[in-house]
Amino acid sequence: MHPAPSVIIFTTLSGLGFGLLTFLGLGLPDVTGMTAFWFFVIGYVLAVGGLMASTFHLGHPERAWKAFSQWRSSWLSREGICAVAALLVMALFGAGLVFFSAVWQPLGYLGAALSLGTVFTTSMIYAQMKTVPRWHMPWTPAKFLTLSLAGGALLAGQITLAVILLVLAGAITLATWIIGDGAFARSGTDMETATGLGRIGTVSAFEPPHTGTNYLLREFVHVVGRKHSLKLRLIAGLLAFVLPVLILLLLPFSHALALVAILSHVAGVATARWLFFAEAEHVVGLYYGKR
Image (cartoon, rainbow, N blue to C red; front, side, top):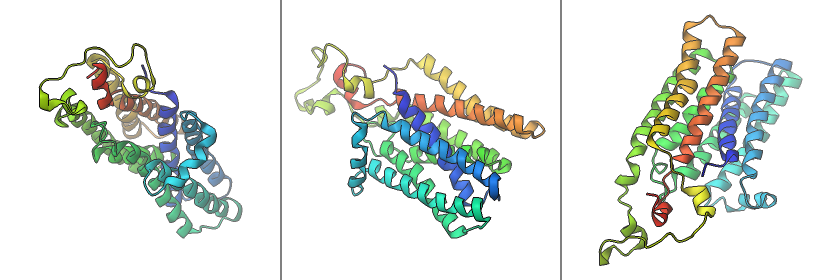
């Protein structure tokens, strides 16, 4: 079983898109006219493309609009509201830059805050899940936000900020891997606590609840060998952080090299996102003898 490609595409592209929109809202880079137009096109293609990819993961995509009604209790609903608000506000801010060469900065600041809010609410969909100890920690939002900002700085051409944010995002990503590896064990969850039968002694499953695969196994029970996990982490770290930083620091700047750094970062983040879902260790796996 492997994580759904739509979720990996969604979290990777939308993070980059809203990261770029954050910097554009802050006036970085300071552009107007057609130059601003193309920056906004890139931001919107990534953000909207990522959001569209997420709908394919729904059982009934045509009902996606219903998610907006649960904003009091659902981080998914809050994410949708933040995303729509960010896109609308940034569209107005962008229109001023592109068509009137006018900098309506209060709108830009609001759009930047909503863009970051979208990334934060996306991260909280996972961070609030107590059933996945690897996700249920403050490092998860920190990882999503720093990755989004690092990618956004790269796309916005903010080299100094990009290097700083790439180093920070790399350190936080490494921390999530190290801390996350022991999260399931530290949670104290086992077959006894999962079934509530620990009071009568040691519990073991006679046989799995199902003889074949099902939704739970496809979505929540991924098993990645340690050897493969370490290899993929190394690939993700090199592509997402090390190579872009080396390119930006050691080589003379050129648009071609900047593009290589961006593509390397995107490939690395996509690999890290795959691991994020594949290593999730949902407690439901206990019922299937997978943990």
